[in-house]
Amino acid sequence: MQRIAIIADTHIPSRESALPEWVVDELERADHTIHAGDFDSRQASDRIAALANRNLTAVRGNTDPPTIDAPRAATLEIGGVTFAVTHGAGSPTGWQQRVIETARAETAVAEPVAVAGHTHEVVDTTVDGIRLLNPGSATGAAPVDRATMYVATVEDGELTVELQSE
Image (cartoon, rainbow, N blue to C red):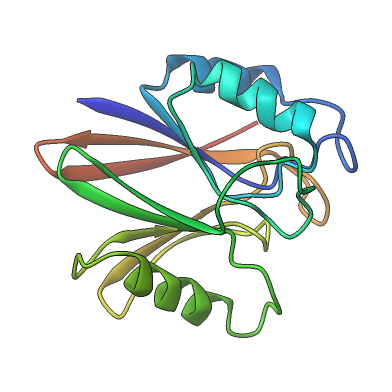
């Protein structure tokens, strides 16, 4: 069984000063971490990479500086589940469709799990056969009022996702 921490929109230091300790604990426990963009600083990116013990798949968000060396989209396969990761930047209108289109463009798998951030709103839905996850903001950065993330497990090709919050 693989344990995956899924986070996004940490916005450190522009909106929040640090990761909540419970998020730090989850990142340290995970076998792999996915960050769907908007670290907000190189220091935040480096800290999360260290907590993830370098088992990190990350993408650039719209507030990330050029010093963060991450692609706009990434894919990974864990235990028979393919994840397509993007930030989902742009207008809130059409966000789901943009994320789904990116997931389809990034992988040849018929039904990848699309992971995105940007809106800070928690999402776990299926669109056109593709499961779409947005873990919200791992620091509770505005406009939301609480920190959230997903902890996923993959076993024998089966994905289970649980929302964690403070």
